[in-house]
Image 1: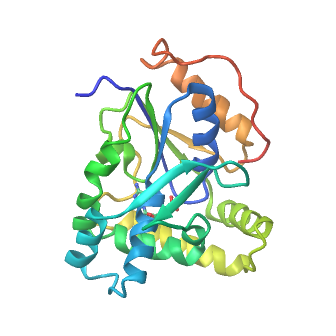
Image 2: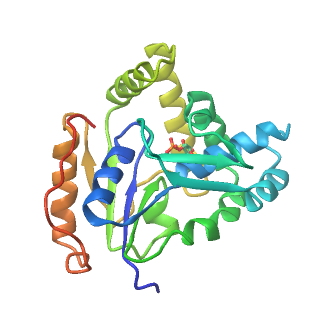
Image 3: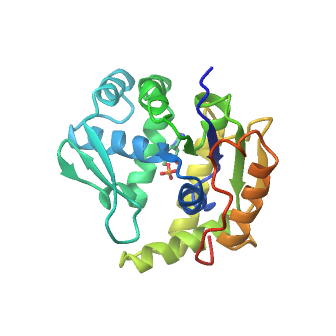
Length: 243
Ligand code: C5P
């Protein structure tokens, strides 16, 4: 078992995982794994190769050979700049369509297996914050802190609507709610690594909480865990309001 500490943040899309992951990363200095981005990249790569997204062996083989790079972004709303096969795809993988493609390929067990080692390779000193659906249940079962962050589907659709509008994207709230509900159903009902809280996860419902409040709750879980004392900076960091 690895000595390197891990905090897992699982939950459905739009629950505020990405935002809280960033505030925790700023406070702890830990690395970040955005596992959803990996599935989004596989979906995009499969589209670009003209593959049927359901042809499991072909998509898994593509996932094993992904040529990707992540770099902290210098500016803008996205924390990471992301490349696929030498081309920048930071914004392309964040569309709702890319999310649907991600959840389609993510339901294929061989694709999940193919991304296993890549995900484990993000576990480096001083520690890792892993954001996804199965971080605490499958990939990092031995994580010291497990959070399951959720929110009602309508609150998540509202947040996503505002986020996409800010980015200048033309979206319909009703379509987003449908798409979020369909994605929740696909992620929760699949047989491999379904979206469920780990037995030892702390469940936080962010529907009525600001980002600062979510961060404070997560931090109190961290303070009561084995993680404190593991070179974690306990000073406050600033968080913008709203998850
Ligand atoms: O988190 P994000 O919305 O970017 O994830 C996109 C999709 O990738 C999810 O809807 C889910 O189907 C899939 N995913 C997954 N397991 C993870 C992370 C994401 O199945 N650990």
